[in-house]
Image 1 (cartoon, rainbow, N blue to C red):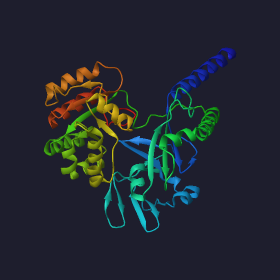
Image 2: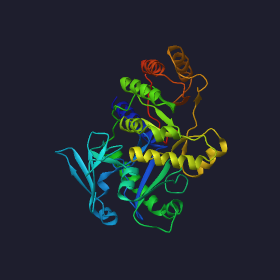
Image 3: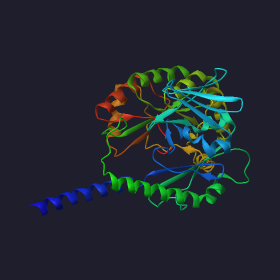
Image 4: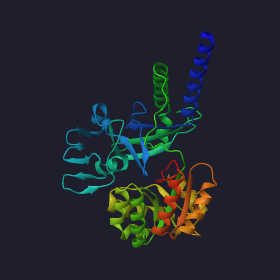
Length: 378
């Protein structure tokens, strides 16, 4: 009997171990480099995407990084405030809020996000505010990570370098591989010491993620849709026209503050120039930019992807039908339910608050959730 019990325990332990290894396969690995040094890699401080923005840990702005970039940080837990500063300039992040402020009271979006007891800050905002250069390079298949994993290198630098982001990524492969191997060893040690089953978090849910992607061209319509999303606690992706970026600064700030994804609708003869102009207007409104783009023209899409933009490839194109009421919501729900896995839906501009509300309610009843699209999900 004791032998059977021991064998059963061993089998259970092996099954848990295999499940853990299987869950770890195919993960997204984000390296962070400052100037010419790749920083240590860990789950607690790894950069991540949220609502279309890449976040980096504020804790890097200390020690050698402080010396390299001359940017420091002051965490003030008692006042729930994080301050990043350099000579004569500082950026204040009220923790738990969706914005940051400079010493003149100017607001910047988005704010800091807390994870694992660490405040993470939006890389694009910090780079723009403090005059740093910032790039993200896909290093999957370069040897930096195992074949089953997907790797990216986030590069923050001060001053000029005679290297493109791609050239630096190639040169940094040995550093990244060393950091990656250390990361895997630390995870193996943790697994051997305490076999655990991941606890369910607020991000864990039984259904699929549904990414509703909407054309934003009419301010009044978008405002009503934002009201409906807010009332339901849901999020969506808004691909805005160039005129919307120029004319609707308040709605853009609302999108950024409420965690909606902001993308660019590129439909001109020169999509790269259109995206550049749209990002300039977005930065003027929110002090942030986006790499999320929707372009139907195949040649334009290829040019944008080669330039480093993330182009939407929807799983369902419902722009010919729209989402204007309960009937359209029921039809869309049936189409989404028939698909396996997460689903990105292009709705175009024919969307109403009533249609959005009806679909969200049906989705949530089945355990699905309407979420903001990120680069890794697009």
